[in-house]
Amino acid sequence: MLIDSHCHLSHKDYENVRKIINNMEDNIMIVSGADHESNIDVVKLCSEYHNIYGVLGIHPTEITNDIEKHLKYIEEHINDRHIVGIGEIGLDYHYEYDKELQKEIFIRQIQLALQYKKPIVIHTRDAIQDTYDILNKENAYQVNVTIHCFSESLEMAKSFIKKGAKLGVGGIITFKNAKKIQEVVQNIDIKHILLETDSPYLAPVPLRGTKNEPKNVYLVAKKIAELKGMDIDNVITITTNNTVAQFDLK
Ligand code: NI
Image (cartoon, rainbow, N blue to C red; front, side):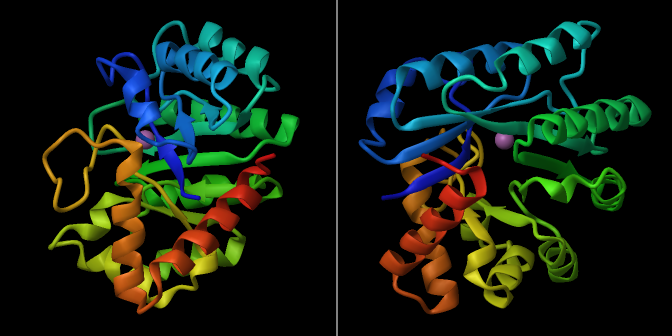
């Protein structure tokens, strides 16, 4: 059984979400919210499908004037059926968004996760040091922490692993120019890795450039098997167990 530990399946992402879900057969998806609208979709999908779990959160580039209402919605649904964490939350300095506001909302969502003892899923882009420092300062590792779509250095990977974080590895690993993340995967124990697609983004080779979907997660497993000289079934079994433990999936 495969688990896509991080994907987006909002009605904005796909014309026919049901078809995409059916393509996964009985495999499992953890669907991530990113803004208020997608959080509502996550809650709905989790209530409808036995093989869908979800995390709710406001992405750092999706903070709007309605943020209080949006955070309240997350708290109201945090103990819903199959809601297994807070995400994706974090910092994104790639674009021109207010950094102080991002930090504030990131911290508030970490505190929410700690209050309800829920795992957190982190988005970080061009902001790794601040992300690392805030997670430490807020004692975030009292709950399970996943750095989704990990694409930082091996040194940083080791620092996060030392803290107890898991690293989400997605389609980027199949890209020809992805030497950095390939080096990370080759040099860390597979027990720290979760498979993900980040669908509809980042479709793996040979589907690069198309709209990604959760069933493509096997291509990520295949590449990891190749890089680590492991059997693909072994990669799938171990990473599935990692994800079940990380999110306490029932
Ligand atoms: Ni994502």
